Length: 274
Image (cartoon, rainbow, N blue to C red; front, side, top):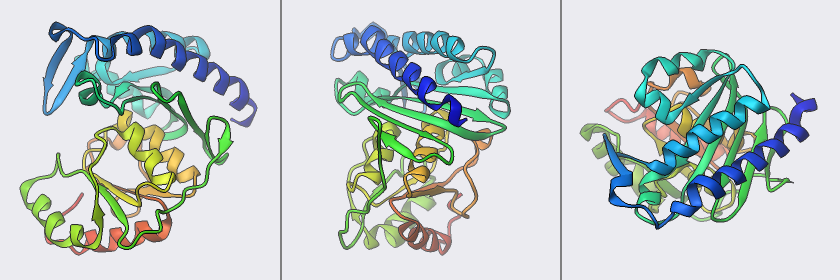
């Protein structure tokens, strides 16, 4: 992969900027009600999501032809698209944080991952409003705008936690509130994985819990934070795989020790957390 890094990274940045300027930013705070639809299960989709996914898929096919392409919106329309997750594939989240975007609020971003056999090999996280370009290649470190990044905790006591309980069952949600929350300083979640993962590396948040682990939300961010020296893994410590997207439970942390502390607390819950 190393011989591909510079050229692939340059092509990816060019593609992400182009799609943002063409399909996403012109519609930010400029959407008609007819351009926003409810997919159900607390999920919105906009005309910008659909158009940007098409542009991204076309661009990725030119960068490395012939790979399976698993896009969030394409898989919503046709579940067989998910079969590509076990192959060498691109995974696309054309606008992560669509709810924010549709409301005219940041944060939102684009997430792209290059995977092989269920494991992420490279990932990109792009914030169009900040022009922040995060990338990682497996075993090559994590970067923001070309500069190496090392995950750092906030240093606060108790640690700062962004915990998403939106997709948890009632019993688990109550257990989290009773037995996990008191050990942390809780902050609002950004409702955007493209923002949450950078927060864990940049000294803004210390830990986070995700219940739903869809590949387009997590493939890029998991690799990026792990390469930055933080830790993201399943609640039992096993590696995140994109082809196990229907398996619940994922812990992210700014350091392995913070991850271990939270995982130990979750393991003691009466209600299974994963």
